[in-house]
Image (cartoon, rainbow, N blue to C red; front, side, top):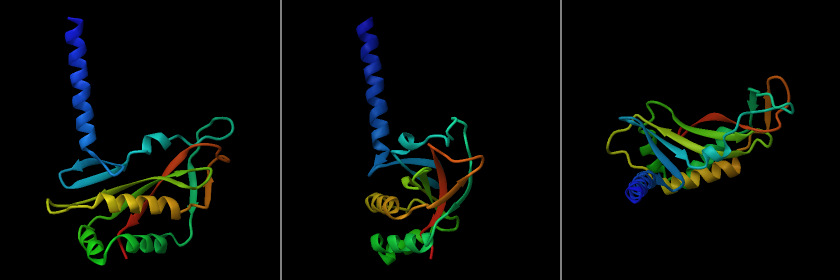
Length: 169
């Protein structure tokens, strides 16, 4: 009986692994938000998510975020990775904004994870996740949030999200 239970548990775990592995591509977990909206979630998100805390361990919230030339830098990065035809095809689905949801390490201001939300899209929508992964890495390398202020003091640990509109001119 114990062997049968063990085999059953191993079978369930194997199935769960295969299901999860099928939904992961180029460092993204594909999440279907609705019938026509997709979220490409950075697989490292859980590793970096942490509440903002001060020296006494109290949780903080973001008061203000400043960055320079972020829009121009994003467009420049996009144009270096995606062809004009690819950008046009992606922008075709821009009836709602395409969002890069960036996770920022609060102390350094560095972007540590980037996820993308697309939709509404139809069945013809195909996305090159290899290029999207390259875009994610370039955002992490080139976009920096240099002036961040917090309510009730200075942060010593944690991360927070900032949404950026992408694939727009």
